[in-house]
Length: 325
Image (tube, rainbow, N blue to C red; front, side, top):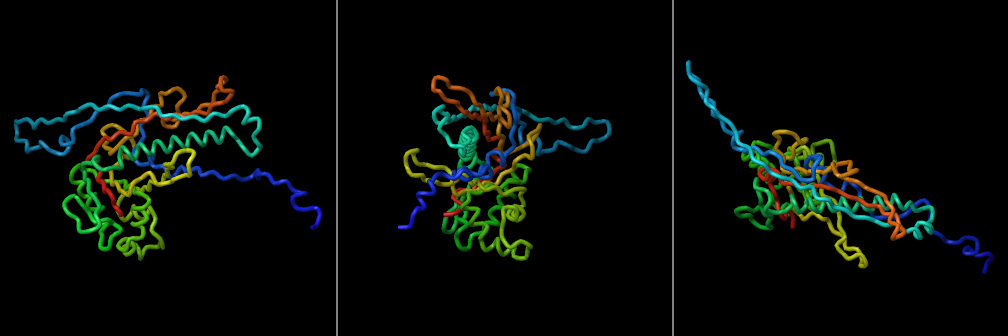
């Protein structure tokens, strides 16, 4: 055997310029991109709601000489929000820190770790609050593989399905019922994949300059400002078990109106109330702190988010459940 061997001249050790971590891209999370975020100073408070019908009728009449104009007005009511604090932490033990190789930046890694957990929690809450049946009164229909009946539509991965008509007709229904045209379409990744490969959509865009269907092109086709894909993934297994990853969004679609920005006398399907009054909270009710846990001989990296994802106007949303099989 030739001497020296490769193991004699090199001791194997981890590289210092790469490491592998399955950290989710921030673009996967949609909770902060669908509805406006409303920074608030108090954790609990109220806001005014105007009655819908008052702004969709007219009392105006011809005014003969010497008579008064007809009187009119509107009513208001109060609704509430409650920005609940969500948190998680990662401790860095002194012994672990002292023994760590230079490739590890434990504070940065812990900060990314807790931030990722908070973003995933917020998106999971968004799915529960908005992306399920029984929430939206502008329309709530179920996808079926065969011929649809009342309250149903044919799933978009079935031959002969009509997603363009289904979605645009839903927009017209919301517009007629509220006076607002939906401007956001939120899709499960599975639904997005089916739509961008659907024969009727490919036929519509075959003469465009782009050779592939993108979210931007779908937005133009469906006459909305944005098509958003809920790409966040969750591990449903216990920490000690092999990872079982799946998308957090069911195979649904939501067509909804979202206000461009929060403001007075604005309608929006939802608002996210973020408690910036929490000490040190910045960036829409979020804070990450580092402090000493002497009893654990550790430094703690703790992240918190304070928010309420509030359903504000259920009638400006149209929900498609089980849009694909």
